Length: 464
Ligand code: HEC
Image (cartoon, rainbow, N blue to C red; front, side, top):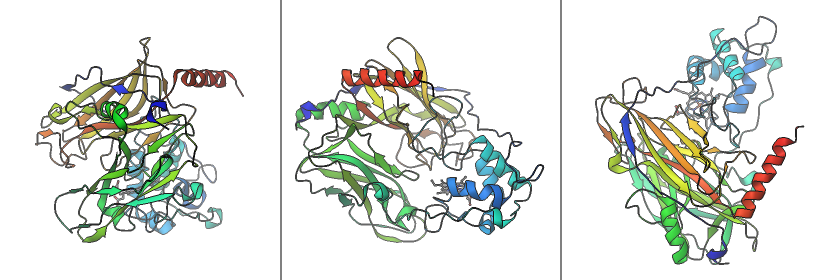
């Protein structure tokens, strides 16, 4: 297998002007009509046993369970009742569960959607307003078994990973500035293998509390062709450093891993190395010799998926282009033109404390403009990866322009803003700003693309 047989075209920044201007864009948070609720009897308020426990099981307990990442557990009535007011406020403002997408525009079907419906939000709000009654525990659903955070989450589906690579140990001091740990690890690859899935797992319980994000970049000898393509595909900012194998996977709180579409995957080559960037922060106690693990599942030997998926980091604003005066809101925009037909797999905005909203739109070659995804309630400590469902993942023809827009709010109205008196520019620390987006792009051969578009049209015209 040589790289030349890989269907890989490249998205390049055709024009990358960045506009940075003040705007009065106020991004609304969902308001809730609190009058639709499921009830145990007409006129009765919702109860924990009858209505709320089930929602907590489905939408909250995966994180709010002992040993998982959340600060408190929501597995029993007693625990949940203690936090009733906080639950109401987090849920009504759509900050919990972490799913900060605008539900009124763009694609709404995602593989990992964990949001609450309007009816579920109303049930929780009404329950809290009624004094968080327990109800008759005979109505309560049996407890559910939750995934063990110490285990590989993809293990149920794929078994143990074929390959596990660990970052070099690092001791996180109890206090101090954020740290970026950048070791390199040989993956021990002897022959080319195609990757089906990747998962990144900070250590449990303490690693999960000190790791803010993990970036893994693949260092491997791609040969001159891919090197040239990859360097423009990865980072569109002027003067960006070429990254040979491109990004392997990015992880942050709220994200588990990546499973590639069956016709696509990532290629590992002999001698491949992982270059890590682990962003650690102090939690008031020492965390000795912390290591982050990356688990890799291969396609069967000899199987070669038709397409190669490339994780792109598209800059909406880089370096000196980000200029956020005190007390101001700013809008930043960037444009990337697809050099070949492609399927977009996901949308994962990255900003810090002043980050407010980010949108990805497509302008088709015929001029049609469409919002693909809009995160209008961005929360800097969550890096939610919005993964499109198979039947809606955007299929975009060659020449489509992706338009990215980012909004920052440096006013006192932004509850996450630690200091509205500060001028803010680009930087690594969470009190500095960033504006980029992680997008997995799978470039398709023209005939394959045409077939996928035709299949989708056909499916859309067959009404059940
Ligand atoms: C993906 C994991 C995850 C899911 C799912 C999740 N939470 Fe959380 N939750 C967290 C984490 C981590 C925190 C602490 C960080 C933060 O505040 O964002 C948190 C914080 C909270 C807080 C604030 C606690 C405090 O002391 O201030 C509330 C309330 C809450 N969650 C309620 C819920 C409810 C209700 C649901 C389900 C409807 C839910 N969460 C779903 C991970 C999760």
